[in-house]
Image (cartoon, rainbow, N blue to C red; front, side):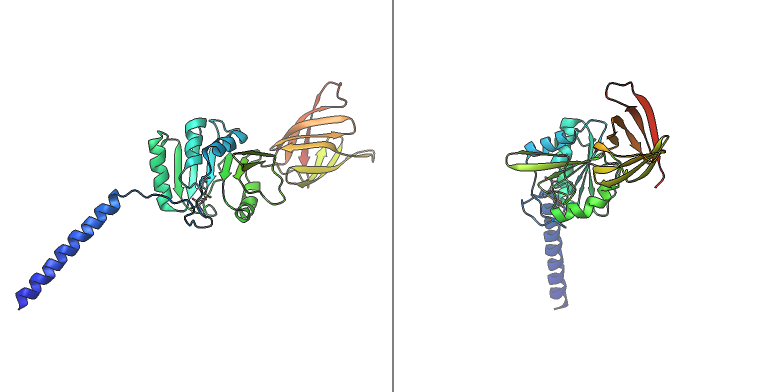
Length: 274
Ligand SMILES: C[S@@+](CC[C@H](N)C(=O)[O-])C[C@H]1O[C@@H](n2cnc3c(N)ncnc32)[C@H](O)[C@@H]1O
């Protein structure tokens, strides 16, 4: 009787062990197949069509010296296209580990595994501050949640979003293909405050890439600045007839100024005194 029970248990053990080994072998060899619309942490997976990916990267003027990050990288299409067609180092941040592994396989197959990397992580808990170009296809409220982080990135960083905007931060450029739209923003330098010039003070108010203000000289005269433009760290404005162009670098801006359009240019600089 005892040996019958023992033999039955052993048989059960060996059958179970064999089945479990078989299941593991099955798991190891079956490749994950993504489904359009599958759940994601904060947004489902829907891939961006290749033609729009290319357009987005062109809008961002991606160069081999850039560092591209795709937030919520799905199957890796943006990262792989950036690496393969634009010769740039690109990283995808993706929460779904199966999608990360799939992306790595895709990058390998396309021969860009050295340039295209994937991090398994949450876009809200992963550092992408070294990016010079950020791409994304998320949702309006997720773009808005990312906005403060993006606005603190290095001035001149380009951000391209498929389909969704950034609320009241107007895009610098909009383009579309095959009925899909992409938006480009260029992170503006922070220029709000009081800037001390050799010959006066410029008080600026800023809303994203828009700014205006008043220049006051030492004689109590003032001019509202006109023809203002801020693109990344490149700034230009006019005070009376004087045209200023320059570059903002933290609390210093400097460049060239022409008192009149036909006059020779001289250099200028200003420091932020708040
Ligand atoms: C609409 S798909 C876009 C995929 C890819 N960027 C593209 O344009 O083809 C959004 C992706 O974000 C991923 N995702 C959702 N929430 C995330 C989060 N908090 N952190 C990282 N990835 C996330 C989803 O798994 C999905 O793959």
